[in-house]
Image 1 (tube, rainbow, N blue to C red):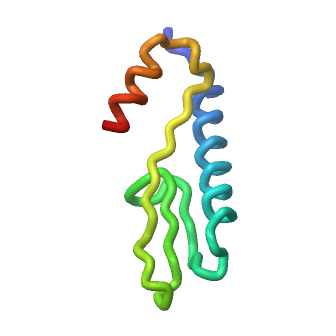
Image 2: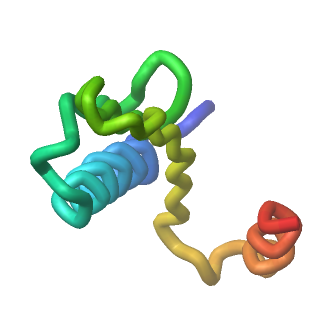
Length: 82
């Protein structure tokens, strides 16, 4: 029987939403036109006003509810930066 506990999924969605808000608030808000969580392309998408000349930012956000639950977490993270 599969688990119906969605705690880890909810944690991931909350993480994405909070990270998206942080990134937008950390930016120059006068340049931001809109942002999306779970956008068409990436987890977080930030779009800038046309007169800024800035390209959209596309961000992948991954969360792990218990980072100590898998001893390969650091290994996978390091490989992702290569």
